[in-house]
Image 1: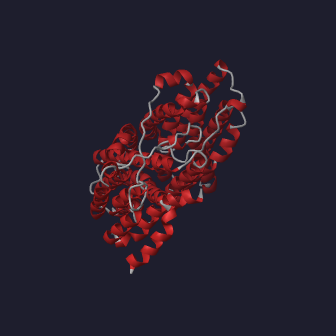
Image 2 (image 1 turned 90 degrees about the horizontal axis):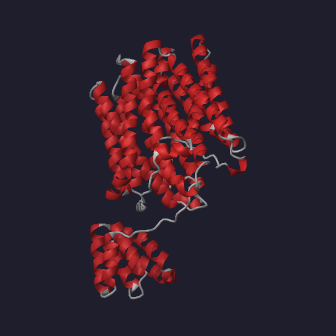
Length: 506
């Protein structure tokens, strides 16, 4: 596991920096639009459009990865996301910002798809649960830290947009400089929402409602905070408390959901969350800051737990072979809820005031609680020992489907690049020409040339020492990578290759 984490360090670093930028822009946009005098309804529309982009990205990200590869697609989409942020700094116009939010949502969905399939490819059956846990922690740590960048400059200036764009650009560097070649992407069939609803009505409805709740609270919380003069560094702490609650409450919620009837746990949590939300609106005018922060952390934490609870509830009713297909539909249900959440909440806030946010959330949660009670009357509880295990979801941008330990594990299949395939075909009849081809590839692309040489070294009719000597003359600055690649496939020649290495470095 330690070796796997080291090999994935560059990807985790890129993920953390990317989430710093996302965390900053998520709190900056509603604050800036509020300062610019936009109505709460307009703010809600702009923030809702982000989830439209997420939905489009979820539908087309796999096709883009297959076309361009993981690294190029990740770099291109994150760069485009940075451009959309910088464009927002040029003009304070709601229509423009809405369009850029769609672009941002699309880019983030594609970037997360690339990262999660890469992590899945690099994990084994034994390690993917641990990798998912580390990934969730990195995502939440980035979102948490990003909130505090809003204190670097005045939100009415353009400096914070520039900082968010810089962070996203920096996030590209660790992945681009990584030696890891992107994995092969496999497409999975999707179960229709209609069929999934027949199998698990509560799972689908609660996924949809959790999308409304999550998108509404984490998009409009800065607007609520402004109504009670929670600004500056205090706003960062307030948003940080909400994200911390979303992280820390998953542990007790997961413990309870695995030991009791999951529907009962969900019902009790919804009632607690609705009560905590109403308490926020009562305590905020009284200026009891610590109590407001605590109640917000509780209600936001439970709202964040509603999504993984919904997934687990649905999976209780499915066979393991259906889990991956069903998860795609649950992501769709969540995204549809995400589109409606901020706009619906903004209409309520525009009519009744900023403090109406938590009343709106409480009302939606109570509606879901009623549906939970209804489902409990028409279907008996599943025996505890037959329930699926709760799995923490640190981000609901996507659900890390292939990393989920509950899904059936499939060993990744390596597919060589076109240069490797061509060279191996040539090597069957003309080894010398194959070596010459590998040298030609190395002159154009060093990493690809080493990959071709590594593939050739496996063949019995290739003189590995001569190949090493020829490649080292062309790639003296990559001698360490070349040595490692050839010794890995031909360990019995390690000592002889080592004898040649000093002379090539001198």
